[in-house]
Image (cartoon, rainbow, N blue to C red):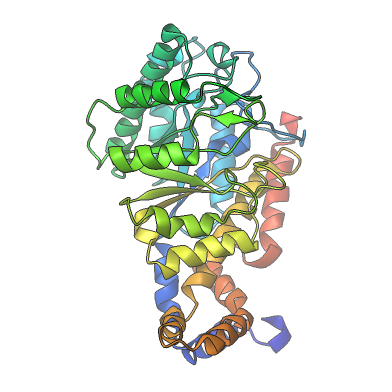
Length: 423
């Protein structure tokens, strides 16, 4: 904290004293933060392109903008970029893969014929770097998804293709989890919906429920695979009706005992994703949380330390939900350095969690239970000035990553090394 004229260790000791006066154990907070693994999303590194080379546009209501140079073009390039990002993010984390990132040796392999062997390169790499993997079936960027319908498609043959794809992806996820010794969360999201007013809303949802039941029919060891389902408010091309809405998947997750994925960008701008956490976890054992930043709509901007992210972090800590929540990132921005986007988003989320862990929550809850709402509000404001930034810098140093803006130079060096990739 340079404005105090203190070096790092002295500044940290001072910060510990400041928090202790509020009854906060800083070392305990840092220990808890170190136990949290964020699942970085592979698709930020290559603009959701994948390695299938189907020639299809992304579709599914997804759109990536920008043409910043350095996009990863191969699995090895993408893995190298992830490694660079992880060197700048304190803690131990994970990688989230889509099925379209399979390595098939240049052969065309249909999505309903994928096997764990097509992801062995990712598994070996993750094991070498002591990372866990998460997984997603890919229900977009494919000729059979061109109409915007997959698991709820009225054509039984097309629906069968996507059911088989989902079922195979669960087994791939289980293989990842078993090989790496940490459960893989296999998350299902589909784009199905209508651009304009739909008369029959019931039929597609009944087809989707039946299709999901088939996908999840095979019991899998939860030590290896955990199933999640992800709803959405609307997307490009599904502005008027989304089959897999929040309400649909909430009911499905509760009745089928699946994880519900709450994506911060998938709700109305006036809704609070933070408020949904305690409501949903009143009925479910676990949730998957996708941290994103929507600007006017589900635009998947890079996560920053904004009020919405801080509110979610506070809710996870105040409700003691960290052990019941799998946290991942979900955004894609090709207008800036793609590795930097991972670093900015991950560090922002970790800082939000640290601020939440450093809050004197027990004291604030006591004031609230006593009905002293004046003191509660006053204290909530005062703790905002506590030196969380000093603690964050210490946490970065302990984990051997740059504090402050020093990490940007590593990004510039990596950018120079990858300049030959072009746009």
